[in-house]
Length: 128
Image 1 (cartoon, rainbow, N blue to C red):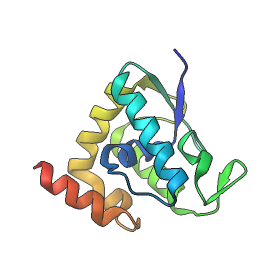
Image 2: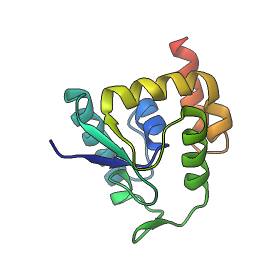
Image 3: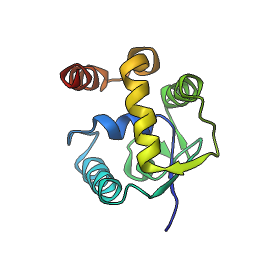
């Protein structure tokens, strides 16, 4: 089974994804990726820095990096609060469970200045 490389904060993005994104291509890519993960919870996920699978169609991607400094901060915060490490590989179902735990406790500290934060916070509140 191929390994899916993801930035740490993308675990939170996938957890809260509801079909909205930067562009139609980005939204379709997120939708397809999430469907694959939901159908195959045993897919191995490797945490990485820099552009990943989801960044393939992101308008902020410039070759292998993001033009925004925010994602690197979000990644660092996810790693800090979760105890995970860059380069670590775990099954999607375990990564998702870790992100669910993290989201309930540290969503605002991790990504409170993200443009999508209000949507994610609303979804998190509805899950309570």
